[in-house]
Image (cartoon, rainbow, N blue to C red; front, side, top):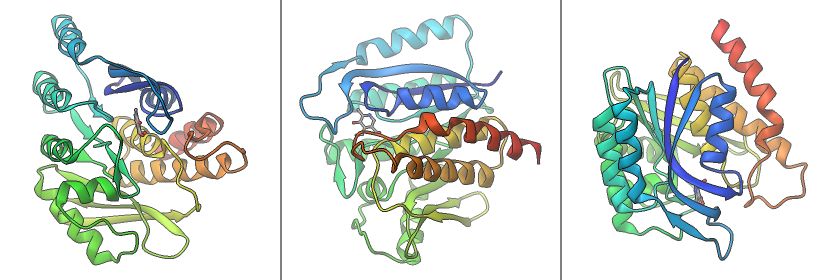
Length: 281
Ligand code: PXL
């Protein structure tokens, strides 16, 4: 069985990071190993959340795995809590990367034009540096704007998106994929650049007019799960975009607030059956 290591926080309540990655990647038939960067009572969209930082645990845990001869098909990083954790994550890549290990980075730190409460510009720059170690990066437009020194825009054209991707590619990853890209009324999706071929790719879906929390984590988990199962990049990102859109659509029927999280649990059967179809073709 394939195995993904995911490095991100445990937000005990609120459907994001590890509480999304574990069920979603497992449902895709891939073992999910977790390295928690911190334990929070909730994600940081709640007020008065508690945090227990786990920076000092990261190296002892991975050194134990190393001594056991553990290997990973992919390492997928999400919300990291501090500059020091970014440095340690780089070390972990060096310890475990082989020619067959996919390094997949979601540089989680910002959305809707703003950095999350725990972060500042210095952190954004370090995250940009970390992205240079990746095979694939999947920032949203806000995160990309912070990492490329571009203005954050809510209205933009294809030239803006391509310029952003060109600048992201210069950070050093093989593939850069921007999420939440909306180029026409009522549509949203992903726009990517594969630096090996110089080709851009674009996949659009119907847009739901609400920004739900945790959808980036769902998108990233499905994309990395699909890639490790052997889907092409095109298929993996299309599956991730479609599953995220479907999950948002289902969640809209629930009166819960968008900042809480999405009801991805209800759409896992769709994910599993679509993955089976995609793998069969
Ligand atoms: O979904 C991204 C995320 C992950 N982890 C924590 C967060 C957020 C976004 O706000 O606060 C702790």
